[in-house]
Length: 146
Image 1 (tube, rainbow, N blue to C red):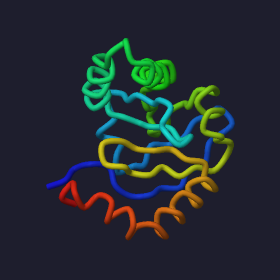
Image 2: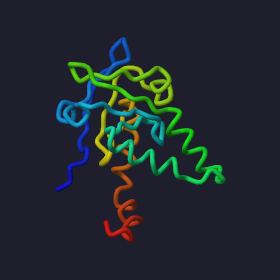
Image 3: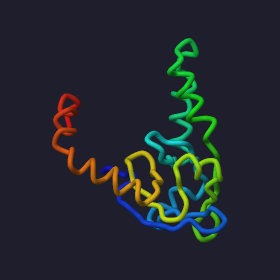
Image 4: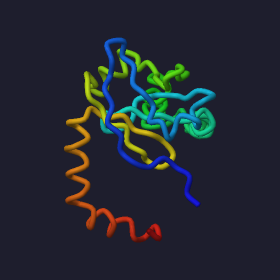
């Protein structure tokens, strides 16, 4: 059975830059988590185990390739470890909030091996586009057995 992250959850960022991890996922982050810059101007949230696995793969990318170095920089320089407080909240550092354009309302979206944090209005735009293009996307991925 698939045990990845699924669903959409709306939250508000408080004056200290904190957001609550959705209650259904808090136990998975009890030992901590990593937040980093995501692609498409959102934030990625990983369990420590999933981050460790991904980080090992990223670290092994060849330094001789500029796109590999760039990807390492974007993922590692933006990464920060967080530990949820008693209410399941984490602090999103100012540089990550600025990168993603997060100010007040956010959507925490399950994306399989990670959570994604989006400004609410950006998520609505991205989701709308995905919903309109879902047939085309599925056709393009058919060769992967999906």
